Image (cartoon, rainbow, N blue to C red; front, side):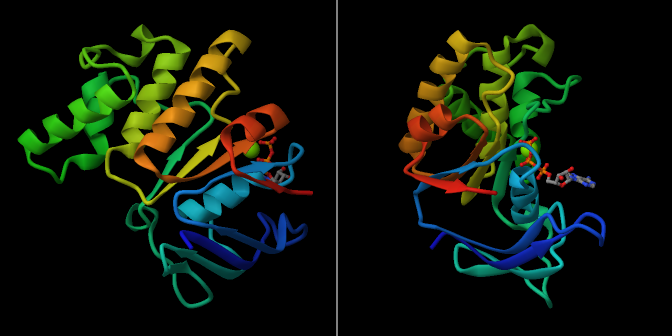
Length: 210
Ligand SMILES: Nc1ncnc2c1ncn2[C@@H]1O[C@H](COP(=O)(O)OP(=O)(O)OP(=O)(O)O)[C@@H](O)[C@H]1O
Ligand SMILES: [Mg+2]
């Protein structure tokens, strides 16, 4: 089991519960889609898993290790979870090389260079090191955001509506590319989408929130 969520409850304000004893299990290497209407709590589940919110009760385990329960809270940077947000959120003042190598500054300069080159190869953007985010198309920005997230070698990849900013044509292309990248590295992935087609195309398993 790469991710196990047990009896998770959460509310932003103490009045209304967003999650009530929510359970989820995802096997290693599995790609799961989280679908459900707007406001059903999809992004919240990702945020709780990444450690950006603290649950009211319940437990989350990643790769067999408890990252949060009633006693414990492991900081986001220690969870080995990579999250790509809906708006990609690349650093506008950093070029592609700097964006990707941002999360691996503990590596030597040589290792960082090698790792960044490897990731640019993976997302098919070798040679784009010196470009700034505003000099990239939407689809290219999205692939750089993915490369940046994958750079530290996360055990779990969380993608929040990765196709929502793309037009239909690009969406098709990116969907295929994303699927092949995920398969190539075999990373366990949760994809949030409100689109049934995206979910069916990308994922082996669908989790419906209501
Ligand atoms: N920071 C916040 N403070 C208070 N309430 C919030 C906050 N973020 C989300 N909510 C509420 O929590 C509920 C779940 O929100 P969430 O963002 O997880 O939904 P979602 O399924 O991702 O929706 P969408 O498909 O629109 O992205 C919603 O009712 C939302 O209004
Ligand atoms: Mg959302």
